[in-house]
Image (cartoon, rainbow, N blue to C red; front, side, top):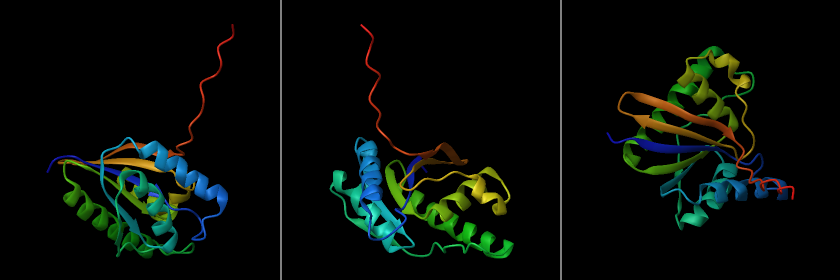
Length: 167
């Protein structure tokens, strides 16, 4: 399998896309617009679909809904967390196989991203809240033959202007 580049992006917090959240999604879209994205997927929620649509627009792509990534509850048991992490990894593995040698954007909830990152790092899943994840933050995962590589976590995609030179 050729390396698959997966931008895992956290969905807006609400499906109605408040102005501040839409601005964050638009910043993420701008940040990822230079990527050669071939597919955009949305997992788990209407908010993920809304966010994915904003991210897909610069690439002229349609969003593909991807079922099967369970949303862990706040008071989820250890078994429920393991099940959710396992299912999320299965979904990402399937997307990585379809994306082999290319780039995809996958939008899901903060909770699912926190579980995936904990799982990939070998951290206890009940420590998932220690993984920072802002609304519309981008996380770069590369699927290699030997496993997953985490390139970045919680990139808020804010574009900042360079400071003016004193002169």
